[in-house]
Amino acid sequence: MNLRNLLLNGGCFSFLLFSSSIYADPAKAEDECYNMAVNYTARGFAMSPTNVSGVGTAGYVVKVMIEVTKGLDYIILVGGDKFAKDLDLYVYDEVGGLILDDRRGSRKGGQFAGVKFRAEYSGSVEAFVHIAAAQGLASYAVLVGRRGMERGPADVEALGVEPTFQMKNASPSATPALPPKKP
Image (cartoon, rainbow, N blue to C red; front, top):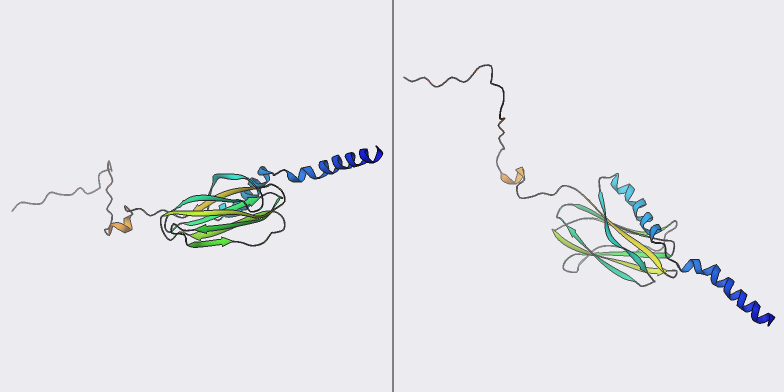
């Protein structure tokens, strides 16, 4: 009986000791993402959450569709908790061509991945987040940022003419215009 109790107590102790390592930490993954975003907002990127976050084991892949506009700069950031040992990010265009990827191995001081690119067309891109290595369940979060001005068809440069401006309700000039003289 003594051996049985010892094994039972040892098993319970081991379970309690390692049970904290099986819980993912979604808040930490989002914090990691927002900490990275601070550097890019200082560079003029407008960051927005994608509502794409979750948990997964090693080998888990999630697809994110992102609308892009030609000529704008985009950044896609993926943050993970301490259980995400290696996060990879792949970005494909509409026809399946690889635009960029981040397949660097695990990093010290937090798990993350990110890419920055200028859109060559208006449409959408597909970003794939891959949890390449994890300890149990790992959390991830995705942020997207963009920088630049959209050019529409009504831009002044696109019109090809010099714009003219006329002020309404302006005060009369000091020398009013005289009507032309009749001969």
